[in-house]
Amino acid sequence: MSEAGANNGDPEIERINLRISRSFREVIDETWRERGFNSRSEFIRYALRESVNHPEGAGFWKDLAVSEAQFDDGDARSSDEIKAEYGLDEE
Image (cartoon, rainbow, N blue to C red):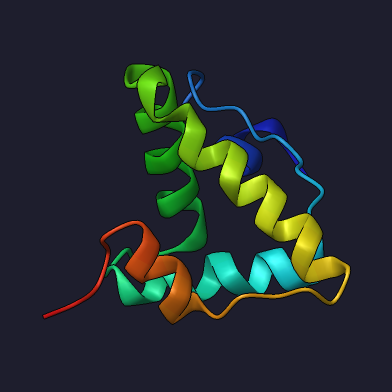
């Protein structure tokens, strides 16, 4: 793939690879759709910006990583339980 194809012609845009478990990807996909993002990439960029701009929220990301490990070990919690814990319940 050409460099232009990888970044849509914008020299400021770089592509990165991220390895995550399939189960965590499924959670991410469910989340970005529920929250109205246009794509997984858009959601991940937003989440990364938020974590950089608001490091006090890092506890959330740590909890998310722990949850992923628990999910992979078969000790999963439902998305409804997690949403309730973080006050993300929809009206």
